[in-house]
Image (cartoon, rainbow over all chains, first blue to last red; front, side, top):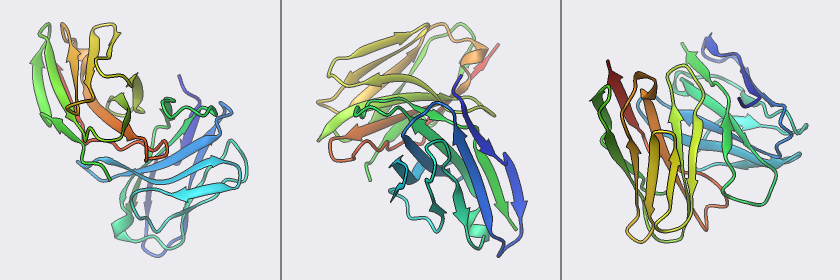
Length: 115
Length: 113
């Protein structure tokens, strides 16, 4: 069982609020990722990090931002939530080697609903 | 962004029957293919990572094959059990994707007793 955690699991919030989705892993992985999944759609990479102080945007444009100040922590922030941000957000991490075949370990996800 | 197609979108299987489904992807610049299983209310779980043309991987009753020249992979479930009910995701990786996975929409498998 992978040790990667996300909080909250479910969040219902009003438009305009600032929200932070937490993701933590205890495996010492350097690489971390955020995916977004709309109902019935694919998982899309929105942010990734290859280590502390490294963040990159993924293939799907997102208004969210991320930070990586500590290896184990990769929070995602929305400054002003909108109904279009309603989605499921999954965090993942993978080992620190140079291989691109490394397995990604996923957290349980956060289901965000913006009213 | 890669064009990754999984078919069928969903399938219903009787317990004990075997089944298979497909992941199609562009064959150019292929590097690796990941398969994941995602059960309802759980986290996606890695099944296989495949890299070589002709690769075959097996995990219990689940196996997968890879054809990189034509750009497809099959996943097989032998003697399906209710615990095999899940969405199965494939995610190819190319040499120019810098380690980023591109997930298909998945095949949802429902195994009924």
